Length: 196
Image (cartoon, rainbow, N blue to C red; front, side, top):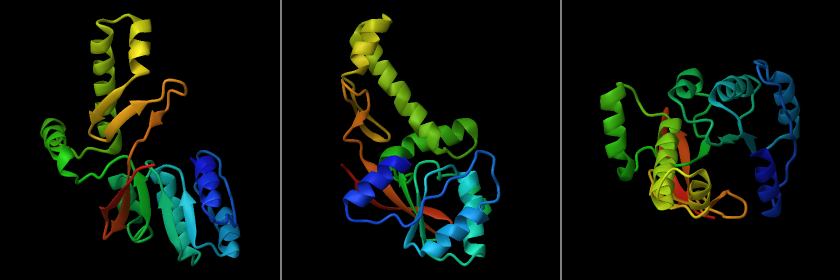
């Protein structure tokens, strides 16, 4: 995610003024954040998961860093809101979907009824992965692994997260829309869809 962010950001005219890393399991991000603060960025991109985002965003604010924070699909979690609500206020998340989109409400309601808890991002992604698999099995007319692989290479399915098409050569999703979400008052508020 970092690689593609830096590539696209710089191609579009942005300048990366600092780039820091940490080890899995780290909980003190102050050394890296101090270097970032000295570079005076307009934005800090945090392409990692909600626990580390909560810790590092709280520490950034403690150090007096006021710039906008931004991240990806590792952010959306109620735990992030519980741990860092004030620190992440006004931050942006690029996500697979808008959690409040009318097209996802039926699935959300069924999930909550069955499991008595909110759906986190992986619930939506697992749903769509299963749809892709079922579609491939149907188009393969059975469970032959080669036929399923070939069917997966020509996937074109509409799921909860949008239309899923797979590039035959790279096996990557093609043309997938993203939802731009802003965190406001502890809520994930949809801003707009982005399509490449």
